[in-house]
Length: 245
Image 1 (cartoon, rainbow, N blue to C red):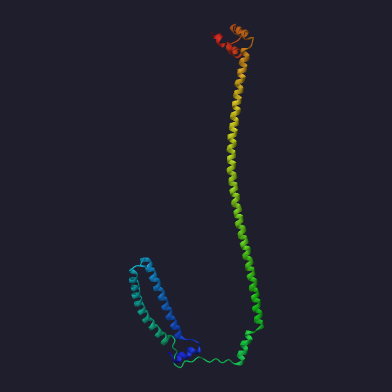
Image 2: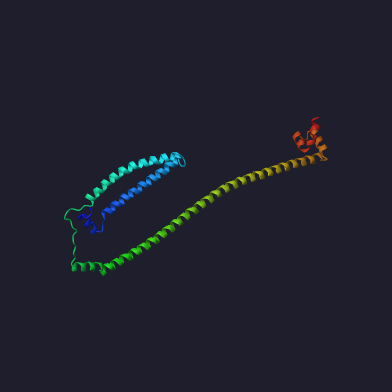
């Protein structure tokens, strides 16, 4: 390709096909070096051959595999280089770049279009609108984030209230149970006091009847038939055994 018409065309465009091909080949060589270096490290680590006699055998085996791959790769890359030079980067015979010559009027028109004040004003308006939209979008995002935080806070408060109500219900049930136990205990105490008081009253009545000076008269009236047995027992309980005798 050197000294050919294609080279002149590419040089006029500040392009160098051969440089591109050389850089590609160098990149492939670097990748191959890195790949086999990594392969050698992993093999040594997995097989634990560092510092042993097997390390040399592994190095020789990897070098043999690399030579095979390198040879085949060089052949194929050489074919690729020839194809690129003869077909990809080749230009037809008689090919020349078109010469563009602008008239002063066209040049002036382009400059006018580039410096159109109306167009610049419209662009400024669009830029201002874009800036305002960006600010509004940022404010809306801030408001949305605030609402999300407020919603999360409300949800958290609702959860706390629910937990408090649940604890209150549990505490109320426990209090009711304790009140029932206390009431039952008080009722039992009152019943015991009432029973004790009733027994004391009965004992007091019996003592009074036993100590009554008229009990002998009552017994005499019973014997004469003036009192039946039930009346007599109620009035003088201490004489029942004696009458029965």
